[in-house]
Image (cartoon, rainbow, N blue to C red):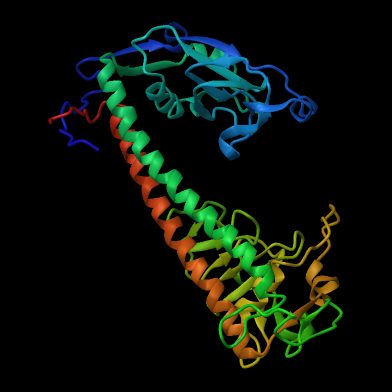
Length: 397
């Protein structure tokens, strides 16, 4: 990144020198995607991306043999939970009917800059009456403030793009580590690791039959209730419904995990580490910091005997359990079903060894996730400064 010189502070909501304003309809041609069915994608597999309303995988739903759009565009999600999500697109591609499209009317528009700029504004215009929507007629009227000097648009976009590239590289490291762990965990928790640090095989080690299949001779099979005891969460439920940005974490065992933070200083669970288990979905999380919870629909799980069982090993074993999909019966699953599930159990020292190997990967993932969060904060700060004209950037080389 080139050296930067800070100039031109924005005062009294006035446009910075060299900036202008205009509505999107005057800057871009507005369009829309078309209905593209899953059947069409399956029957016409090709090289041209089909983008939809989803946000995972940059919105890519699949690839087909033809394309509807070519060149630089901005797309946004028009309907549903992701309405107002903005993407920069280039090359040849397709969009489904829940995507709006923007194509520049002039060569004095740097499309990637405007993609960043619109991403800070679009959500403000989403209608949340019924199904969330951000339709073309609304987007057309959005007023944008931007530098009229094309090189400044490019410079701002380049700075933000550099941070995005760092975020993508960090994401790639995180995903690679997760794949490595997923590959290791199946072997470690079914075949184990010997005194030389090698994963066992039946060619070099003795195995035996068990209700779970072939396992190392030294291992046993236990039910979860044989090694874990549960505690109800009633004394640790947060009272407030509005969460803070700092304080004691408020947890759920589902994908969200940390819902927010509270300043409440009573009823904090601190006997960690502990497994929190969602009684309805059977999701679980390993927690090693003090916390409160949102609801009573969970159990706190602890090892019965710390001299025989490593809690983190039990948690990792639980992640391999293929539990049937849950219906809407709101049944409390731990007592009625889940605690009776069997898992293989190695000797205590080997449990530690297995956990140590997996924890090294977990630590790398945690480190990279913290770095990613730092980059996202940096990007947010840059966007607030550069896309408003609060801070101006010039090449001083």
